[in-house]
Image (cartoon, rainbow, N blue to C red; front, side, top):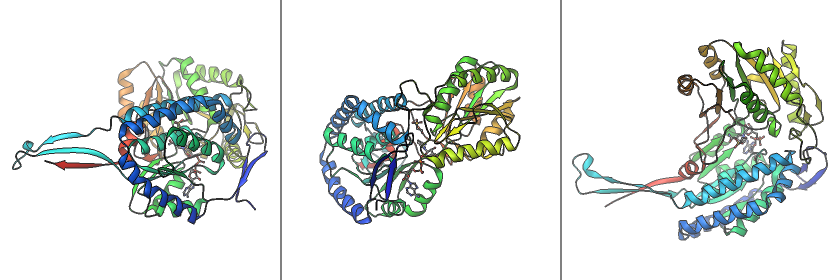
Length: 455
Ligand SMILES: NC(=O)c1ccc[n+]([C@@H]2O[C@H](COP(=O)([O-])OP(=O)(O)OC[C@H]3O[C@@H](n4cnc5c(N)ncnc54)[C@H](O)[C@@H]3O)[C@@H](O)[C@H]2O)c1
Ligand SMILES: O=CCS(=O)(=O)O
């Protein structure tokens, strides 16, 4: 009897059934990677860069194969899956470039008495073996954001993808090997949660680079003990529409950053705050745009919203919509579910304490919240336990700077939504949205140690 069944979220068909890796499998992989640490020490940075450049090229060449695998295993629309591979190419390219630029600094001891004639040379060195754990929703680009910088920094990598993503992960690892990564430098295992905890606590794991939900991160932190943690976690990101906003651009951001990937993005616009002066105009435009979206088969080129990852996820979103309605919310669009598909839904008058807005809702639902003052807005945004990214539409740069300083987030995008991401920009949040920063150069630093030579 297999441990896990990969089910196509749209068709319900069985894709593959398999057994999880055991603790013995993890031991074997980590023993291999321990040997690989010596190999990594011998490989110069430019060779690591060339391997990453080759991987970037292979991602482009095999884009359609990978996109089809992602759509099959996650239900992500084929257009969204292709975008993910384009992003992974950019990430790999950035890793190749940054691998050649892991430079330190030189310090002169004369800055302070009594030391004279001493020079401090500060360099970045690899941490050792990094356990990279990835979520279901961007199985290739998030893996690239972990494996690429870890490899560029000279580490060895134990890669643990989501159980749903076995096939796309195997394909990706095969591309890494084809590009030149040695099997003693990169190993992949898919254990169950408890055995993953065994890997987390393993003495041959020196750092854990995790992307996923906050609950899982807390469980990992509890088992990890004394080692480096890099956490990219949940979000409840606000999209803010001020009274001077370009409404058409704001509507487009709300549609693309909440309903694409069926809303299953950490940086999705999960709460939309609209100034009272333009609330009705924005709401009416948003309703018209949402009603035009094609919903259904993710393999069709023009489908905009596909299924959620599984019935439990769709059920949770449906339950939160129903609870909000029972407590006074009004449905403007949607509120329809068929199997794993939840139609794009827009609600207003949602209670501030409704789970739909108080928790991270991973689905295609926009709760509209009207506001009157900046102080009220800041309080509404910052009350969340999350603090990943925010987006504000305004022509007032002084206001943008004020919000940048007052909002508890890792990034504020101006005249864009919270879903903005450039692969080489710093990426990460505060509070329960994570610890540390990804974004290629920053991830390299997170998975390195600073070592100083004094001459
Ligand atoms: N901040 C980011 O960059 C980012 C990006 C994508 C997704 N996410 C977040 O990920 C979540 C959705 O993805 P998901 O459903 O795959 O998340 P998840 O937390 O359920 O799983 C993420 C990964 O961790 C593993 N895992 C789960 N529980 C674990 C445990 N107790 N110990 C060790 N490993 C464990 C899973 O097998 C999977 O590989 C959302 O909260 C989303 O916001 C964050
Ligand atoms: O789920 C979030 C990942 S990303 O699309 O913001 O990189």
